[in-house]
Amino acid sequence: MTGTALARLLALVPVYAVGLAGCGGATVAASTVATAAEDALEQQVGTRPDVSCPHDVSATVGATTRCTLTAQGLDGTYGITVTVRSVQNGKAHFDVKVDDQPQG
Image (cartoon, rainbow, N blue to C red; front, side, top):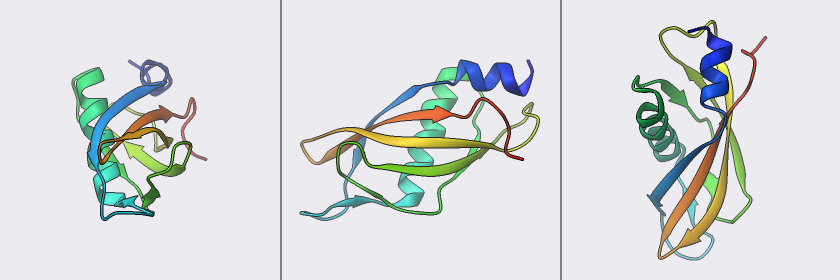
C-alpha cells in the first residue's frame, strides 16, 4: 500500500475519551494527544504509527493542534490535524485527520 493510499484510509479517525488535565481552562498534554492518536490509528490499520505533537491542546470544542506521523510503509512524514470534537464528563473526544500528501 502506498503512503497516499494509507493516508486516505486514515482520512478521519475518531479518538475517544482522553482525560483532561486540571479543571477550568483544561488542556490535554501533547504526549497524551499523540498516544491517543497512535492508539486510534493502530486500531484503524493494524500498524502502530509514531505520532509527535509539539503542543498541548485546549479542551474546547473546535480546538486543534497539528502533529506529525511516521510509520513503516509510508513515503515520508505526514501532518495530522487533531480537533476536539466534544468534551464530556472530564474527557475530550477528538477527530484525527491525516494529510493526503507527505510533508515537503
